[in-house]
Image (cartoon, rainbow, N blue to C red; front, side, top):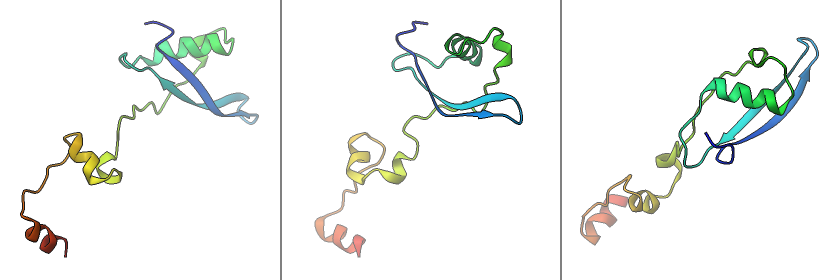
Length: 100
C-alpha cells in the first residue's frame, strides 16, 4: 500500500487522565485504493505518535462512509442523473395531478 494514497487525520484529541491514555477520532481517506486493515492502521498510528508497541493501540467502530443517505437528502433530479431514481413518464397533466 502506498503511503501517498492514504491520509490519516486525527480530531477530538483528548487526554483521559482517569484511564491514563490519549483518545481521539480518526478520519482516514484512501481515494482510488481499497480499504485497509486495522493492523495497518495501528502500525501507522504507532509511527505517528511514537508508540513502542502497536498492540497498545485499540481501534474500534471502524466504518466506511460512501454516499450514504443520498436518496434521502439529494434532490430528485440529481438522483435521476446518477441512475438512483427513475423518471415518471406521465403526461404533463398527469404530473400536475400527481403532485396535488
